Image 1 (cartoon, rainbow, N blue to C red):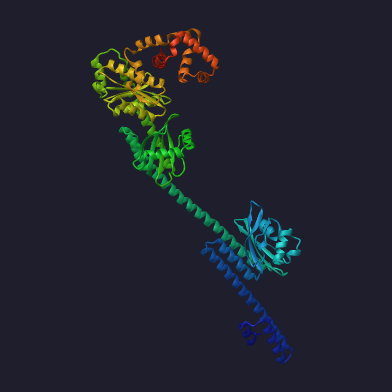
Image 2: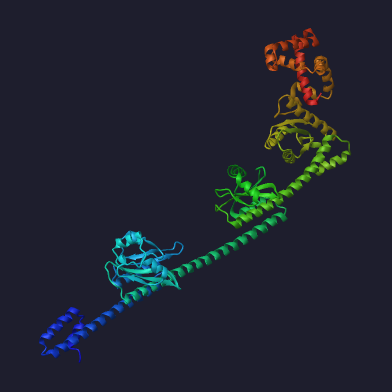
Length: 637
């Protein structure tokens, strides 16, 4: 029997179940008999079933719409947190739950932690971490199977823990449904819905929440794949960047290698090396020898600046470079590398790059520059050694006074681009505590500058120069050697004639000046014979023999007495004159009793005669004592 239009109209208008019940009661009152009323009740039942079918259809449409929106989010949204938040919120709305939440597993810790919640009111619940297998959430996250309970608080199927139950009670959650998040057969977490009232969960709600969980799992997997893709692209970009940098570094290294090789082949020096490195690496470059003396610097740097930098900044960094052979960053944008020949430290390269830092390719180039520097320094040392040997042989022949062919001597001097007739000054220096080889190099360089000849002879530094003022040459040598370290004493002499014999005589006089200065306590000075005063008697051609006779006449008895008996009457006499003839002061100076001094003075009087204390004889004795000491220091007599 067809359904009356009135019931269809009510269904079409969206009438509620109460409205349909009211319409049935109204029509039953108007029904003529029981059959008519039974027919109306049948039609009312059909209308209720149709209404329930239509409600179910609308619910399914809403669920499908939500799932469609979620699927669209998976395509359009890259932010995994935003997708998960939307999934949890939609699941709560469609299931009409009081709260929904999603957890992720931490395999290392063996727990599942809250990632997203919606409808939660407890801060403790939002930070909850459940051991796998604990509570409903932990059981779902561990087993990968859905679980639900009408009343979690009293459901003993689950392992309860006090802190978990406390967090659930804070939310006042009773009924809970949980489904797993599964990716490629692996459980990665769980999606749950909760109600604050006791109630069952129909199969449709389990299915719906499972669908949302599947979408959440896809979102998480997409996020992982997207992150992996981004990382892979970043690695590709980084690899490309490194390849470009490496290619550029190889190009720069090849350029530096070619230019440094060209410097060596063309006989270039350290100045060319620092300019090449400064241009290739960009910055200021210095080269110093092992002692820290500046050898070369780029056009934008100064030797004085390099010395300050090295003194202030090197230290352990240079030691590390010496040990490893590699460049070392000193700090403040400064790099240092030792130039080595085997284990020998020949020099040091210092770079301050304009960019403030140096990449590894640049550091390898700097180290290549240190190698080239070592080659040049070794070559220069070999050349210098050969020159020093030849120069030293010539200097020895000129100063030793050996007999030989004068023409051949002049020819050897000419080969050094010197004029024997113009070598008119001999300066001899004693450098105490300095490196003899380095001091000889200083004298050789000064000799070249003065159109002369410098070097080492019989343990002294010697300079032959073209000049008319001996003291001026002596002061120049003194100043140059002072830079090499240690006190310097210089004696000078004028060459009377341009011949090897005259050069030898001048050398001996200049050397005697040095010894005399040191004997007189004037070490560190520059002097010629005229500057020695009375002590020049020691240096005269006839002086030594006459001096010996004078000393024997004046002090001979005392010298003989001391030699025979091992006494020191000469020392006592010197101390007595130094103390102005006062016995007490003499005793104090000699660290003996004054009676002992008196006895010695009596002995001196017995040897020299009764009038030895008179002014005339006393002056002679003081002069003789001074000359005796001087003669012992100069000639060893």
